[in-house]
Image 1 (cartoon, rainbow, N blue to C red):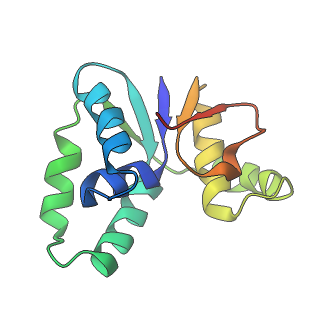
Image 2 (cartoon, rainbow, N blue to C red; image 1 turned 45 degrees about the horizontal axis):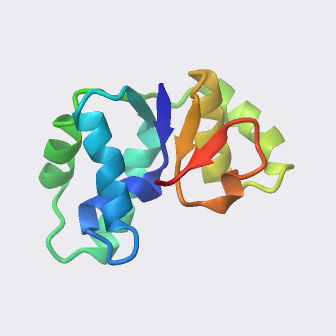
Length: 129
């Protein structure tokens, strides 16, 4: 199983000029059967970012789009994630990235889909292609 960082969803849902095509390719892989996961944190971050940046955003639209991704697991945040994230902050990650990284570790993700280079040089490979 692979882990999807929040930026992939943002680029996909906004059809970002620079990264939308790559994000759409990643999401299409999930639609076609690739197993993937993300954190409930990503949904919250999506809501905040899209509400701020997109004129046509609605919570219903977000829920419907994500619900259609049948091979995507939404993982809960647990207290252990917060505890473990503190150690990752010492590696230079901010709290949000630390929580995503810890959640990906918790499910033994093969790699993290993200264009965030903060995930480089960690134990899980980062991909954005």
